[in-house]
Length: 329
Ligand code: ADP
Ligand code: TRP
Image (tube, rainbow, N blue to C red; front, side):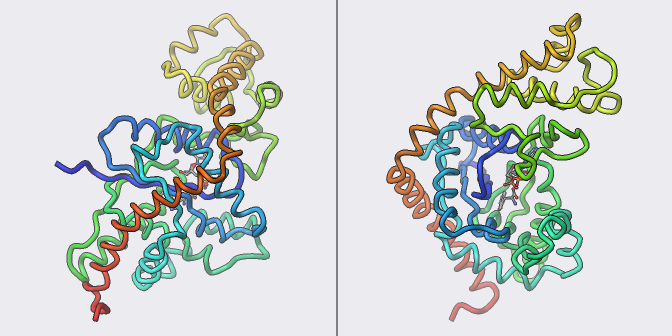
């Protein structure tokens, strides 16, 4: 029997952080290695054009993300790794789905509202229709599952709505996909446990290729809660709980076990151990990323051959869609 498909992507817009890793990338690697799925992982370059960018930097960011994927453990022999813009069907299907997407629903998207605030001088139509392109990314590959952080749930809900509407109007064509979350679907900022960790706040964000010294400095400065015990309590100790969740996700140990380990220790001792755990966890990744970054030819070849493979599936689907809506003549 064919394995169920899953698809996910990340925007090439700078260095990845611990939120991207614990919420998404770590799961990509585990799902790939479980051998249970047909995996498609792509670089969402078209999505990244909705934010201000420098064309001289964009191709570097694309290759950097390809290096990130491989350094973290994605393997082109096990997964199809590709570049979104190399496959025109993504844009074509997005354009078709736009006709089923009510303006009102797009207007309610949290990410659209937030980005409209962070880039008030550039509230462009691409930002507004972002979720229809994301729906196309998923629906083209008959994906049953989409591993993402929980900030993407609203977009996936819309994806399911669009799939359902299309199927009802034009006949069964798409699968309604489900999100797959990790045990850390929302990693919070080191400076404010009410806010998502995000690269737009670099001082309170742990980048995967930060040096051990940078990691230590950022973790030691992280805000904590009143009291002094290292205990998991999202309501009363949101900051310490966030740090405990990082520790648990990286070591695979349950939080109760970590609480016991630090039962007679203070916040500072816990933070020192967390910083070491993070630095050690990414030592191999940092080394591999450094090596891969010098091999742009290898990265480009992997993306080209992955895109060729993905295009076969995507082109079949877009042909079916065109037939269903009556524009294939
Ligand atoms: P960013 O939000 O930093 O711009 P992206 O939007 O490119 O990052 O997100 C890439 C993936 O990482 C998505 O699956 C997203 O849900 C996940 N992600 C981003 N930030 C976090 C976070 N703080 N916690 C958990 N997952 C996150
Ligand atoms: N919207 C996702 C983000 O901001 C990136 C993305 C684009 C994506 N297309 C996708 C994720 C399709 C999963 C599936 O992080």
